[in-house]
Amino acid sequence: MAWHSIVPAPPLDALIETIWDWDMPPAASARERILPVPGTSLIVNLHEDETRVWHDDGRCERASGSVIGGPYQRSWIIDTAEQIRVMGLTFRPGGAHALIGIDVGELGRRDVDLDALFGASARRLRQRLLETPEPLRRLALLEGWLCGLRAEPALDPVIAHAVAVLGRVPQLVRIGALQRDSGWSAHRFGTRFREQVGMTPKQFARLLRFRAVVAQAHPHTEVRWSELAADSGYSDQAHLNHEFRAFAGITPGEFMACRGSGPNHLRLD
Image 1 (cartoon, rainbow, N blue to C red):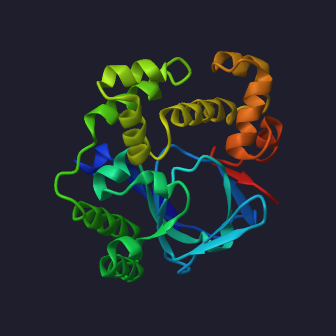
Image 2 (cartoon, helix red, strand yellow):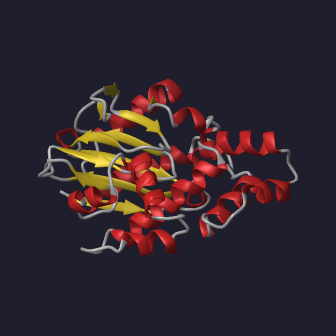
Image 3 (cartoon, helix red, strand yellow):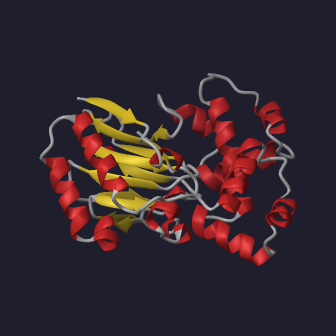
């Protein structure tokens, strides 16, 4: 039982941050809150052929054990009892569109079954992964399957440039100037960005800025939130508190109280 991960070989490395394999005992917390990240995720559950996601209003959404979804703009809750043997990957922003050709804006609303996208190929993949006991071989199988999805996939250079600029200084970039530099109309720039990245440029910049705050706060036992808000480009601490509620569904103080070993998983009980 262990955690394994790899960075795929080119050209997938430009589209996918990491491919991972998780085979561990159930977590101490029965449920965990997952914070949103700017990339699309693909999940293959090898413990149960089901994926369950809870929302703050109590709704439970169920899908098959193999899904693709995100990026999301709000946290969600998982059942750790089903997260025992799971594989997955995280796309870089724009990577899922480049590899699969899907409108990523639709994936930000709900998870989509891999069967619905790839049919028998997705079913055969999961069965082969179930029959493969060695984690490194499972990772190689998943990487090989991804390589066969599309010949020579590549990111749209205009969108890739916009993503890179926003990633460097999301609190300082003026979206209008970025759009004008692209040579596209505002409508075309916004539509293409949303299709490929999953949200508008402004929403993407907001999420990146929130993620930067999470990364800075997570390792510390005490945080001076007013100073961190100012350093991160927020108008004041109230503005930062608003963004925490918008993206995480909790306050900064609640985040500190329930954070776990990683910055994305928060304990609920």
